[in-house]
Length: 247
Image (tube, rainbow, N blue to C red; front, side):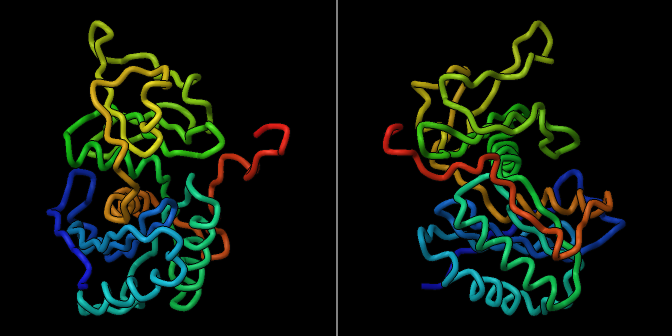
């Protein structure tokens, strides 16, 4: 079956006077996606591939480049979802982006997967205040709050791993304190346990390489790239399994 692609027109935050070609990839959750940002236009291949990231990711990268008639060497930079997310998935994405960047001597941009979810919330629903949440297992969620600035979602607080019952939203900056928040990500499957209040939530949303490519383009213009060997995942916690006494 041929993969699904979508095209999106340039969004605010992309400088049309500074064209670029950027490859992005993400394997932080059950989803697997790759995308190209071609001077502000996004081309994406997004698929649900639980436990198949390492087998499918390279072929997805090769196919999206081939379909666009481009080579890896023509990219200005490579971006990846740096986390938080599944430990194995983050290692797959990090190893892939490091290997590809080494091969063509290109810089790398790591983008928060929680920020990517927030960017999707803004892109799809026009919401300027988003609470991103990814299921972290062990009765916890990866959590981040984001507000829109010039078309891009920026953090309103530090990202954390926390129990849903302990989640709080940042202090409102809206007039009369009536800021409206949207929930995005799999952590919102625990909405009934979550202390924060949202107007709506989408627990079936996952980080997407297309939104990573949008955010990475801004970081590229700001000179926030790193070398391939400096590209590292962000786990937020080192504990990966419960002890018997904790189960």
